Image (cartoon, rainbow, N blue to C red; front, side, top):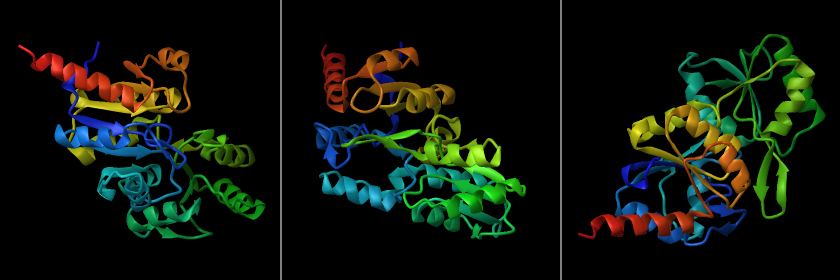
Length: 268
């Protein structure tokens, strides 16, 4: 069974792990202080593409945790980076999504357009309209490659589980009769990009997440250690069904266990 002792790099989900809505997880500041003290490198990776890395850094700073935007990887970034390796700068793409996704695509050299496009890149759109759905559907039916940042059906919030990107994608998939290629979790692409960003290898990397069907499944596909916390979407039965390597109530429980192991190992 994998041990916390060998972990040097972490790919950490945010929603449902570090916070729920605007409510920080217990011992959040202590958890990050521990990572810094142990020189454990991390990437905060989320399927939520509605915000930029700068937005997430600012949110965590309000919770008393200081991180660099370079330590964040959102699915919109991952999607844009993946596509930039396959298409030259100047490729025309239509974005169905929020401004953060559009920013990620333009930063990688794509030209955003509503016609004559090679790509339709879709994600959560909190201002979705019939016209937006129609435009994207017609472009896909005309031959544009259909890419989804992720397929999460719901998002955990303080109000409960709300419609996620997958709900938007399902409408486009049904109308266009075309299945999209997804880039975010649970596909291994996002984990591979995160490890590349940290200079990490699978042997020393662990994924921490609250959703078994994305965080844990994706970690398994990427060949890394998986840690499920029960503070968000999945319960213990789901975590066990997806064969998470380790299961904790929340990051406070994980921190306590990790500290105990290190104390035990340092005792003669």
